[in-house]
Amino acid sequence: VTRLHPCDLEVRRGEVLGVLGVEGAGQRELLRLLAGRLAPTSGEVLRPSRVGFVPEDRLRDAVIPDFTLAENRALADAGSRRGLMDWRAEATAADAIIKSYDVRAPGAAAPMRALSGGNQQRFVVGRERTVAPDALVAENPTRGLDVRATARVLASIRALAEDERGAAVVYSTDLDEILALTQRVVVCYAGRLREVPAPADPQDRTPYSRALVGAEP
Image (cartoon, rainbow, N blue to C red):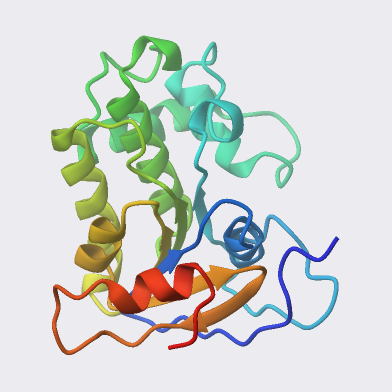
């Protein structure tokens, strides 16, 4: 089944690219291609050697609740390392994430399930930013978070592009959040991708709404 038709897309340094789409429109496959979690059946995807990925369902795809924060930090390198684990180094790395991303946790030995949803999400964002400092792909990164946690997660993503060295691609079901966070917006509809230029009136949502249902510009 074709989930995403052939398309051309360039993500530029120093930008946060927004992605919109209704359920099943192809955005899931697009983001996983960009993050290196899926291989294309045709064409080519050029990406940095490491791309951070914040999935929509963190408890299913990003963390193991019964593992400690140090063990969850080590998941970022799962499948890429061999030999004995240096758990002291993993604990140090987890403590650095806790400090830098304001994760409310007693330390690296705390189990992931002891954290609130917002703190879990900040830890995931911090982990992915740490292992891949120049590129991040995020799916609904603020889903289920309160206002304070949402602001901190979005600030972490925005900071990636502010030094014009990195770039981020963010999908969200919240149109206002996408427009406030990103410089460009692309819309997926029935597996096809198109960029929607910003309207002259910043309050005009019509071009995005029409693109989401496949209407002509």
